[in-house]
Image 1 (cartoon, rainbow, N blue to C red):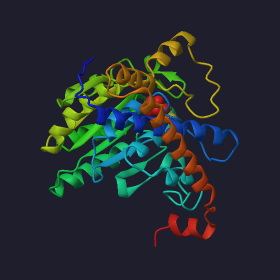
Image 2 (tube, rainbow, N blue to C red; image 1 turned 90 degrees about the vertical axis):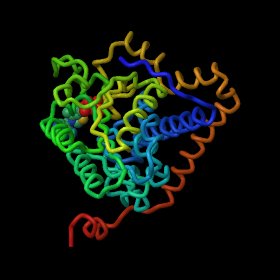
Image 3 (cartoon, helix red, strand yellow; image 1 turned 180 degrees about the vertical axis):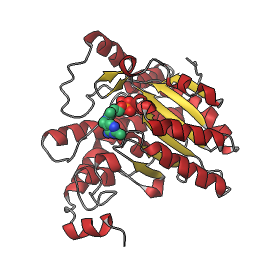
Image 4 (tube, helix red, strand yellow; image 1 turned 30 degrees about the vertical axis):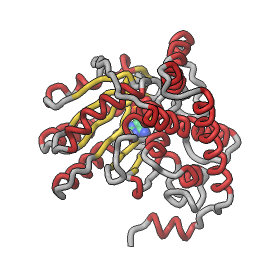
Length: 325
Ligand SMILES: Cc1ncc(C[n+]2csc(CCOP(=O)(O)OP(=O)(O)O)c2C)c(N)n1
């Protein structure tokens, strides 16, 4: 596992902490709203994985493309998607980012380069390869990032996408959030290869494994690949070892949990870990840290209020937007 020494300063620490708090506050509120049936559809939270979203998306430009999967909230928020548009989308309102017709697993925000999310595990991989091919053929220096879990690696389209990306040297960074679980099945039960970065070894491109609950390690590991990708390199694969602290979906009884492992992971929570480190390093002080959390929760509350003011989409709008003319 690569040990990273991030070049962290007060401004960056503040920014990363703010992003992680926005994601955490958003998802905790979504969980509450789901319990009272105010958000609709299946909800997959990324609590415990915020370090990956913040460390990766915080370095991207608006014109860089991000593709996500079923656990997409953090990636969208870190890429700049507005909280009210996100919340309205999950609440099924017409002012949502996709007019309330997509929901949690299909958030798109083209303005900020959040180009797609999908409930089809691994279905984002060929789309991301296509986007990277378009960037390359267009002669631009924009790059594409695709987030996926370790479960997606067993899908055929993962291998097809990796193969073409390597063959055509696409400006594509594969970011695997390896939380060791695919739904309720541990990685050891569905693959003989522990590390996802080893799966792509035969293709010969650069790959690395970092501690995903250490936002600094993610920042540094991803930053190295991003620099090379901007200069025309690629593809790359960054495996982030992480943990989902919530159930697979909201409502999951989580009977597969190991209490001791949970306690260990609680201590490695990316937000608490980074906040404590930033305080210890003097990059941030207690009142600032508290203010960052307060502001994030207030922004989420404003998003809920904003979403509530919006109406539900009409059947006519759904028909108009679903069918191509
Ligand atoms: C093509 C396809 N097969 C199966 C499923 C059912 N399914 C939903 S999530 C999931 C596990 C995904 O695991 P992973 O990719 O590791 O992501 P994580 O949930 O751990 O974030 C499965 C099998 C699906 N949505 N799509």
